[in-house]
Image (cartoon, rainbow, N blue to C red; front, side, top):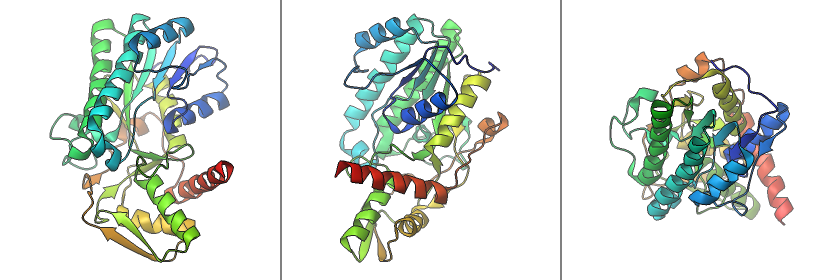
Length: 316
């Protein structure tokens, strides 16, 4: 148990322009943190080990949130596994090596639920890590994230620093990426169904069979969980962050269709990969610390769609 963070302490949120990092920055600002440290990828290439160390030495953060990563859905992961592995390993090593050299007292590394074996028991407990083969479509990304968890544990063992790691489930919300080649399933569906409505299409095709089950967490709920962990958790095991509730991709597609007002036919393409058959997290650890999600999927989809439409209008 660490207690409340000092709101006057410098806090570095790596990846602050992304989905997770931007949510963390919004929350910290609302909570009165006055010395947030950020840098865009144009200002600081976190794959550059020396540049990252110079940056951290200049700002000397007391808290670091590692939310920077190269991310993408099944298509992106399958097309560029070497890039996903190399970029994420370099980003993590750059930040954590620099933080270790400065003996930053508090660091939270954010991984992903894809670190767990493809066919492990459901809901997935943190102890399932490294107990079986990974899902092939995102193996490279998962191995990079497993390396990050191992680095946190190793620093705790060797240097005695109380660093921690967390594994969020599938995320969505304001700031999500909607690029058709790189987006995750929920954002991809929102875009596809929205385009179908605007173009008057009679049907929408969804990748896979529609049978895999997935869990979805609003990114603002994740940000709340991150702060809870920074203030209340000190352990070497990664902590799952999710809702503990899942649904099929077919059910998700129906919910997205309702959200955007699509009334046509939903088709499935079994020739496209399904990914892991089921992935829902055991959230007992984070709930025992006093956190629980606040945003229902229906409500979160509505607000995310509103954000997406506004962003589209701004671009036009």
